[in-house]
Length: 147
Image (cartoon, rainbow, N blue to C red; front, top):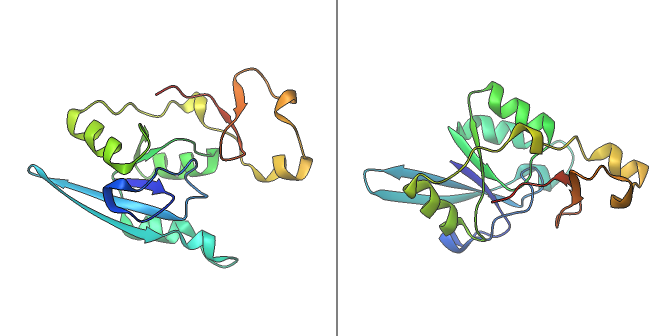
């Protein structure tokens, strides 16, 4: 499982507000009662010419846990058979606990937001958004997802 995180601090890594903008992706591997955690830097944060999709393709996750995700990322992941879950709690440890308990919920398609690029260019405020959308902590306009 891949989880976008803001810092590489093992199980104490804070969950990032958005999949594509995360500085790191935590790689969570479970097997027979044990787990392994590693983190890789998001190459998209390195500047032009870098692509997170090459990394995601290389890592071959079976699932991701996110707080927010754009339509393009959602479609690319689901078309590859990757399950997308709602990231719960504040740290990677919370996601791991929910995963072990079997309480992670699938990310609802209605909560996927449109690409952010046009919104930034248009300079829209959250006041002009439909009620189902909100300005999330990452500064993007996302559909509300309750955890």
